[in-house]
Length: 308
Picture (cartoon, rainbow, N blue to C red):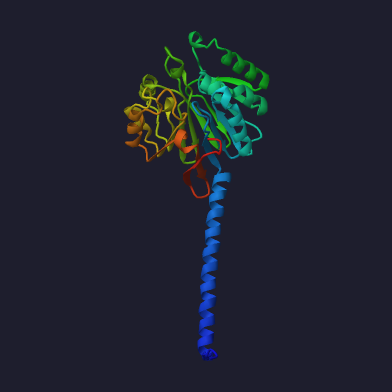
């Protein structure tokens, strides 16, 4: 038996067509809005005016700061991580460095500089004021000195209170402040970077004694983003210091299952009491702090690499 056709009145046909067109329009608008949202997210990650990249280098530190296209690399981890750093810089489209900063002279902060400075000769190399009695005698340190000299960069030892510009960002040295440091960690160059209304604090391996000295100076230590001192060790990140910083975001750079037990649980506890979010490279991979100057908003993006 032939299937019976049901005739639809002309008015209903027009109504159904109108509804169909409306549904299609709504779905198209939603897809367009979704596409714009994805595009905006990609734009923020790739083209944010101010960026901080805590590179996942294992047990060590290496942080890329970009302000209006001007780049500063703070530390370069151990020599074995130099390939990771070079690949990361290239992946970010970095072609030159304005500044290479060594927070202090331990191998897990300066070991990768020879390879990095050869590939990306900076305009300026800066480091902390280290007492002569604490200067290393290691081969790593000698190679670092040779690389700085070969780069042809302007070499500057920064004192507390010194400042310079990185694009639209102001970089200020807050420490070292102690005159009688007993350990290289407490010679760490502590940098406060301000871009418009955001502040980032980079503390190297500064330990609690130096934190107290810094607090005694009466500086404004509040920061939106904190690179946690000494890989999250319990020798750093005292409660008084963190209470003064009150970071929105805190980032710890350390290796997976490292022999030092970094980050210490007590440090994580202290951070959880004052920071909105805490990230660890060993778990989260590369940690990106991004600030969009057009909207005045910031975000954290984490990215694990295939090799990690």
